Amino acid sequence: MRIAIIGAGLAGLSAACHLARSGHQITVYEASDAPGGRAGTVGGDYIIDNGPTVLTMVELVEEAVSAAGSRLSDLVELIRVDPAYRAFFSDGRTHDGEGSIAVYADTEAMRDEIKLLAGEKEADAYLRFVAHLARLYEVEFPNFIDRNFNSPLSVLRPPGSFYSLLRLRGFSRLDKVVSSYFKDDRLRRIFSFQALYAGLSPLKALGIYAVIAYMDSVKGVWFPRGGMNQVPRAMEAAAAAAGVRFEYGARVERLVTSGGMIRGIELSARRFVDADVVIATPDRPLFDQAALPNRRIPARLRYAEYSPSAFLMLLGTKESSPPAFAHHNIFFGKPWKESFEALLDRRELMRDPSVLVSLPTITDPTLAPEGKGIVYALEPVPNLAGKVDWLNERGQVRAAMLDRLQKWGVLSDPSAIATETTIDPLDWLDRGMALGTPFSVSHRFFQSGPFRAANQDPRYSNLLWAGSSTVPGVGIPMVLTSGKLAAQRILEAGGRS
Image (cartoon, rainbow, N blue to C red):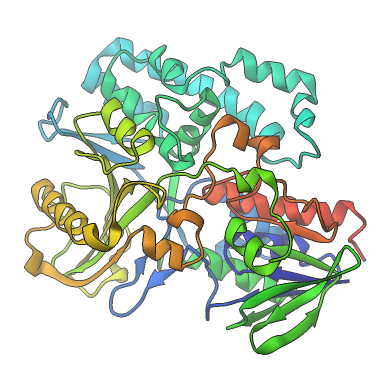
């Protein structure tokens, strides 16, 4: 059987690895000249990630590479990032006098940190919260994330899992769940801000999204030596060693249909390739319309609500990273509720945003010339349905970010910048991401689990989807799982030779 996978991002590579030893002819078609998709880099003297920077759940990468018959440790060196984050608060209310607290994945180290910050009661509450997160993860991941759904009613089977999720307050508000453990507002922020990764306000997200905090703040964060793009390169190597073929510079323009089936793909220059099964991984809403222009896309995508976007500032600097910081740093703005109302309700720029600043040369100095550094700064911003005129306002947003980096001490002066790349929602749109957001369709309740756009296309039985706009959703763990689930559909349908 001929299987065509469109896209060599993490979803496509995951699908390729999980299918690699099924005995079929598998080819991955990628429009760019290298694997990675959104997990790419800005090259040159500085190797700067221009996509995700927080790597969690490395066992999912190991699982994919192992399915292809390789060992991850032979292909890439993964370094534990400890602390996972350093959180900075603008009011300076922390035990170190620097306005910051380290966020350790090691439970005892984190308990000690919280005890110094907020006292014995909050430290004991943290242990209870971790136990809650572990139980939530044990129920949620196998039954609601790492699983193919055939209908919304599938969520009720097995019933024991669904009711366990109810008992664990998975359908209560995340902020109420977190607040039931912590009285200190700084801790509430630390263990709920991750809802933004799913395109949700921590004040409105459901308790099931506490599992994201478990993935990074408890299971831990890693970094591949050489940059995040080394993960897709390792997966490509594993798949290729198992016989998967890769074509780069191969942009898929159209899916060719006949008799209610996909018959193949049409590449640029009107080159046709036969395929018995297609797995498509580009951002689904835009690709669906472009590749199948005479078909209505599913209602779940036509009327979808999208996540906020991100403004990225990527700097190669002439100075090393300041020692006061960690690899990943969260700078929390003063307002909390008001910021999310601006971002998600009014769709405006946040007046005092919370910003993720990654300094990867702290972990891997080889990413920059000797004695130099890298700054990766991400600010949540409205997507293109918002009120920001990016053509006219991108300069102001850039200037405000530079001011913050200097105020925080991340950057000494603009003259220290050797290279600069900024990415705003218009740039994300140019890269094929609907409404200019790399976070795709949001994870409100009726766009999650069995309610999210299915990976089995309702119109063509031999067309499958993977990536952030289908199940299970956004983020590296979810996207890796999406490729695996698409592969499982093929294997369970008799796709083994």
